[in-house]
Amino acid sequence: MIEIRLFRDPETKKLLLAFSLILAGLLAAALLFALSGRHHLKRAMVDSQASLIGAIVKEYPEAEKDLLQAIMHRDSEAGFRGKEILARYGITVEDLEPETPWMQDLFRYNTATLLLLPLLAGAAFAVVALLFFRKQRREIRGIARYAEKIGRGDYSLDIRDNREGDLSILKNEIYKLTTLLREQAGALQQEKILLADALADISHQLKTPLTSLSVLNDLLSEDPAEEERALFLGRMRAQLDRIEWLVSSLLKLSRLDAGAVTMKCEPVFVGALVEKALDQLSIPLEIKALRLTVEGDAAVSFAGDPRWSAEALINIIKNCIEHTPENGQLQIRYEQNPLYTVIEISDSGSGIAPEDLPHIFSRFYKGKGAAPDQVGIGLAMARAIIEKQGGDLTVHSEGGCGSEFTIKFYR
View 1 (spheres, rainbow, N blue to C red):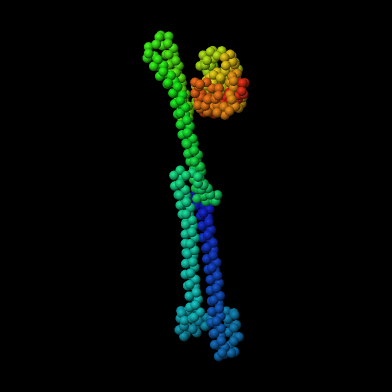
View 2 (cartoon, rainbow, N blue to C red; view 1 turned 60 degrees about the vertical axis):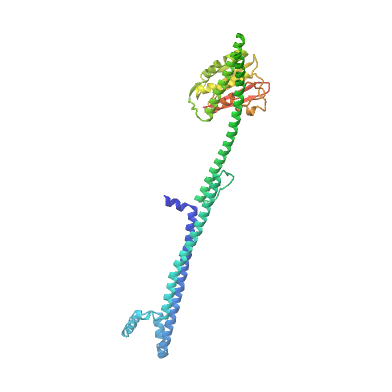
């Protein structure tokens, strides 16, 4: 399997192609040498036979036609008689070979050819392999330098390579990793900024009730009258409740951000969910004397976490109550279709300013109409809870016409 993949590699294919071309060239050269040797051999044999014919015809002119006939048409019987004559004089092929000039030339020619071709082949293969591995080493060193710069935090480099081959694939994968590291570094830097801003906001939010507690504690230490004492204690309780709610909300948000919350996936009936949320907010509803309207089928449901969904719904309804004047109207509608379950919460408040709409779900953001004691994390937490369950939370508002929050849990 490894061998098959190796031969599929474009770089290896190029190397094999170069070797194949060299081998083809060497075979062509060997063929040319063989043809040249054959021509040389024929010429040497013609020269030898011409010398022999010339010497015989000089002494026996009448034998000229017979000699030409013997050369042009091979006669095995005549050849056998010739070898017998040579044998009577003690002459063999071994005796003729080293003493014949044309045989010696041919031997030297063939020997040079046999030695030269392997040397040329080895040199050509060595040069091609050296150039190939030199190129590979240069690219690997470039990748190593690139990785070293990435290690130092320099993500501005681009190592992408659109050619084929394993090294090109490696470069592109490293570039993808570089892009991911750059994005993570940017996100980490942004998270540091957000964390610093969040800590500053938390410190500011905690500073006010802690300062109030300190002042109230000093007043209590002066042993005030019973009525003032009860008033101071009530204010201290309110500030402690605010701190408790703030810390609890921040802990919930941090758990959501860290992915430490595991949402259940069980049937949640929206009617019961709305009833539970309204029970938690019955006092502010009664104080403002809001007209409440709830519309929906009791069978409407979605798959989610009942406890966390109630937390999100409470935060949204609480925001609507805070921004609706006394004797105002609060309406909750819910239904389902083959695609999703939708819950709509609308109020008759002053609405949200257009410049505040894009930031309404950002944590610690307070719009123009926000009360001084508001923190700005309720809607942020509601959206985080809903999105954690695969849902969606949006808001539509116009100045002076109230606001409408829409929750969708997809089926």
